[in-house]
Length: 385
Image (cartoon, rainbow, N blue to C red; front, side, top):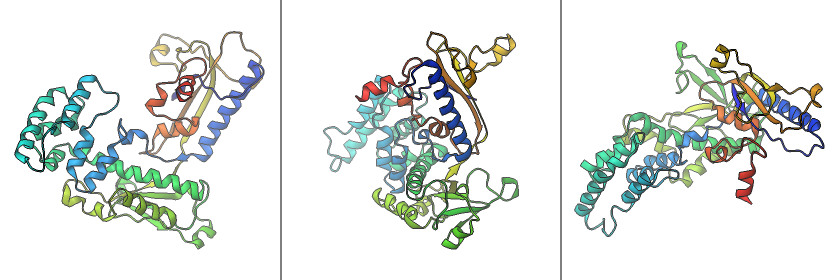
């Protein structure tokens, strides 16, 4: 279960009882909508890294520009400690006063020296950066080798981020132009998805999956619903949708300086990574959805009973919102919360489900500015004013 605190649904109710009824109704509507309609099955922002730039690395790699990929990984990032920021600045300026096009040997020496100097400044979890500077300290200017020194799963992550970036863009376009309730000609629908034990590939990969490109006759027959519609993760073995959604894939790739053939050439650039592609449902409908609306006083009190509370016999002091007790409000400030639970299929993001439920961003930049009491978004509103 997930706890949402200090919920502010807006409204200008004349009294506390009316405000309580408004909260109850809006939270009820939100829970029902999540259950019946689901949400656009976007990849969450965590897919794109803390600095939201992992897909940019993927673009550079698909172009075969490993130097650009390394520079994106190593450039300055927001929110890091001062000594890491300083180390990144030293890296960015490692060729200062050097004409790299004319003094290759001097450039190699400067890069090796800089890499050795900043190795100790890379944090323990900066595994990509540490692999890069370790390699370049020994083999300066060999950026393909430096990128190859990164663990395979991390190298794949950059390319998968670009696939996810394309998918999210096309998904938004498909919903904007075709709605979220009906299929249309040009849509791809998943007609077969074998389980892993019966010839399928599990949660990822194309094995055991078959798709159909819908024509007008298929739409008229009404055999398929919006929950059957899939969009591809770009690759060299998948089928693209028709209509404007398919065209958008080409447009986005062209804008980024690549084309569909780049995914097929990836094996020549990195033999450990294959980008055949995959299919992902456009709409995700959670199962086992439950929700409970609560009112409480203490902004940090538990709204879910922990295991330790159960052992010690400590009950939750929050009370359930009910319309027939709307008038029973004390003069002290009452806070509203919601406890929601649901089950999602593999690769779906709970953060995206919550974004649909709350109609609010789930990024850390937004969430860290929310308040536990009063108007929860007051810091965001004041910063944007």
